[in-house]
Amino acid sequence: MLWNTIKLAMASIRRNALRSFLTLLGIVIGVGAVIAMVTIGNGASQQVQQNLSRLGSNMLVVRPGQSTFGPAGTSDARAFDERDVSALRASLSGVRGISPTAQRSAKVVAGAFNYTTTVTGATADYFVVQDWIIADGRGFLETEERSGSSVCVIGSTIRNELFGALPPIGQRLRIGTFSCDIIGLLESKGQSAFGSDQDSTVVIPLRTFQRRLAGNTRINSINISVADAADIPQVQLETEQILRERRRIAPGENDDFTVRDLTQIANTMASTTTVLTGLLGSVAAVSLLVGGIGIMNIMLVSVTERTREIGIRLAIGALASQVLTQFLVEAIVLAMFGGLLGTLLGLGLAGAASVFLHIPFEADGRIITLAFGVCALIGILFGYFPARRAARLDPIEALRHE
Image (tube, rainbow, N blue to C red; front, top):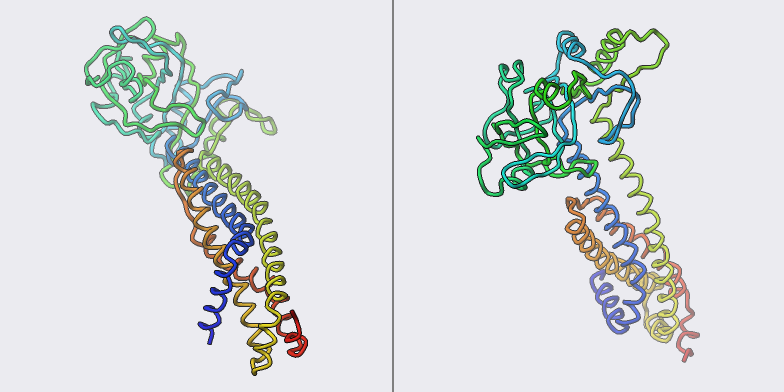
């Protein structure tokens, strides 16, 4: 019985194909927009988390001053020194590594080619803390760190710009006024969460950086990688206590340094993206209401056009509930068909956006299922009134209708 009712509904839709399609546009646009927005938003959140994870896992970034986190952050507060780093290493437990770093922009030269990049002074722990993989060569030896040897590890962008397809290991690289031997090549990471090229980097021992490039012993930041994510709050608290004591900050005074939790930043950015996605999806969902009104309108027109048909069915013994079911099923089929087209449209738009914006394609099966459920609900809600009107027609009056 139900299958016959569905076939009748499909036949009625096919008889007025253009009108049915125009009726569906509101549903198609609404469902398509919601699915596209949610899928793109999920992909953007995933991309943010991936970009921040490339900076290092379970990482705390300690910087002097109360500056805004990011590559452009600056501060006039007193910089850290090696004694601060030694105190943290001696007191903190449950960490994978602690890496002091100092950075400066400089021009690097190899042969006839030169390139302006970021030069980082760091220890061997830097590659562990930042989750860098050395694709070729090796990292720093302890003796090279202590003596301030002229060695360096380069990123893939530096290799491409200065050496092309040639192997860089063993080549000489001039940084400012001194030269160093390339001992390692880092695996590519791509762009960071802040849009900078992480592969455009040259890493040298911290002592070499301080002596040959900076001319001072200042440390711009200390990166701490925590072994277990559950221990991050405790390690952060201990770090703050150690540095407050080292920097002689009295109780009640504000810190003159900042300890940032990258995991917390990632979660905050992902939550912000989720809220914006939900907001945009809610605005797009208004189209579903417009589509539902369109379905009600077309079903009322259909009831008026088929008044004589309804009268004949009622006169030969059809029950009012059967007439109501017929028109209700027709409205539901119409809405579900619009939901199917809208889903295909939304996934297509999201797929194109993921390619264009270079973000992961993260389709959410729950949203797709919910979209179909909402379409069925719209068919029921906006199809019930026209269906009830058809079921309540007087057979004699319906047969007289022209």
